[in-house]
Image 1 (tube, rainbow, N blue to C red):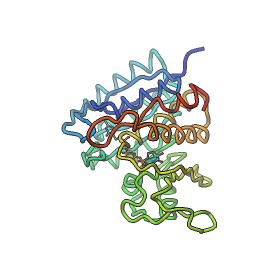
Image 2: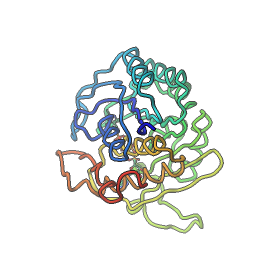
Image 3: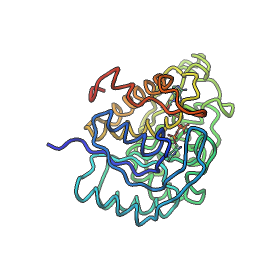
Image 4: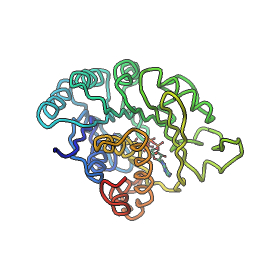
Length: 290
Ligand SMILES: Nc1ncnc2c1ncn2[C@@H]1O[C@H](COP(=O)(O)OP(=O)(O)OP(=O)(O)O)[C@@H](O)[C@H]1O
Ligand SMILES: Cc1ncc(COP(=O)(O)O)c(N)n1
């Protein structure tokens, strides 16, 4: 028996709240041995990104080969991939190893507005990476780009999820952290009755190719949401590495990020978008008991 092994193919966030640092912390908290293939070094803190230094596609491929050929990978996630060459190299290595527990977080723009994926690389993401995704986790702006449509209602989100699944992602989770920012309408219950305003609830929409599920939690009014998307997708990968099915992995990830955001005031770091408390879920629940 080996320990569950997780790989993140992602950018480095010097501030430690997002990127591969958030991923490795999340893996560790969920009892998974974490490994990384660095795609880019970002100069970053809670105030934003002030520099991006990408790796070559070859360097990314070699890192993946090094860990894949020796240590092995039970599940992986991708985060910031920066350009089409890196996407193609990562996709080729994932295919060559035959890895199937693949979570694609299609990171495009940092909270402060910095470009973490070159615009022209979106096509490569659709063509090479989404077909390999067991789970894809776009936020609303990323889902708009991938699906080629505006998202204002939950019905729009369902349509976007179907379109993204059309590129080959088996399960699509369109996260609701950004809902309401550009006039998306209030969350509605299935009866059509207004359940609560988007100020109060955050709803992640899950589409598994057959049906939809809405996972909701209390929307925490806070500026400490740096790295929420990275952490959420890393938690999904960690649970997959430990043997969970997709449904359970996504549910645990939602609980994990909710606890991490709730615990952020305890950290109270930086003058901008602060990081979340990756240890909060374990302190509440305990390791490996999702
Ligand atoms: N204020 C909040 N309260 C509770 N949960 C939240 C909040 N904001 C985001 N989340 C949760 O965090 C996860 C990431 O969602 P979000 O839509 O913010 O992703 P993201 O845009 O990729 O992250 P980021 O904005 O940090 O780049 C989702 O599970 C979402 O439900
Ligand atoms: C290196 C790196 N990768 C990803 C993100 C986005 O973070 P998130 O969407 O989780 O906030 C980031 N800010 N920096």
